Length: 161
Length: 111
Image 1 (cartoon, chains in turn green, yellow):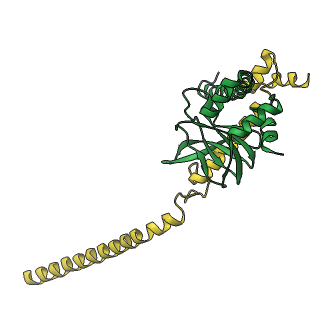
Image 2 (cartoon, helix red, strand yellow):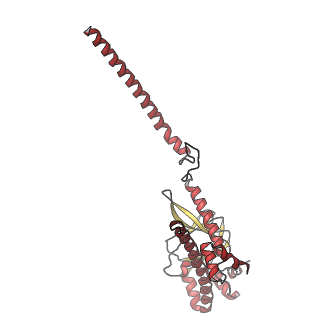
Image 3 (tube, chains in turn green, blue):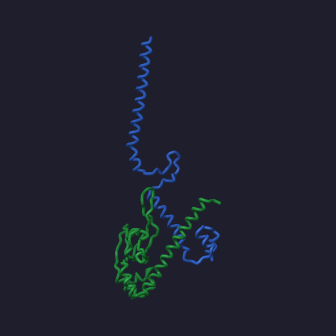
């Protein structure tokens, strides 16, 4: 599978036609991350968007454990999933860190080049941003469900009827 | 007579002093040995895993890595529970199942 086909099969770029995914492939470049390597860190500026082509990547957040900050895995993502979508969403600040769980291959795009492409082809931007809204909506719903369940447990333990 | 009592008293006092000094030396040497051994013992087992009296597992027995591993396991379990059902339209009873673990809501899953 070439780069354009891999991108077309990804969650973020599904629905694009072959010409559009080809133009996307032209403005991106393949990068590699070794197992254990941090691809980006939480709180830093997101200026690049990544699609996982192979391998797996863990999203982590820092937690104080017994007096020491540790990176705790929230989710493991595999091929076809997007990383650092904050690059497309103001204020462009990364909300989690990403660490390669295995040797991984990514396809990376700088925000400026992606936005320039969408100015030429607004329909492509609409398709991708619709896909991105679905990704963000799922994350929000998931976080809400986890939060409400945690609250429910705390209420049940603190205020026994 | 008075001289005898004075000599006996002095000897008794000296005996008590020698005994106290000996006891103090023994205590100091035990303290020194403990101080020497403590860092090695802490390095070998930074956090005691079991109660030294009854051998019961302690609540804070885990190392940092063990805590992180357990947290990640719990997050995986919670996410698997939640993610399975998020994309389905659901009645209120399902919300009770999802958020509160109310088993009556699980009937919805069979439909």
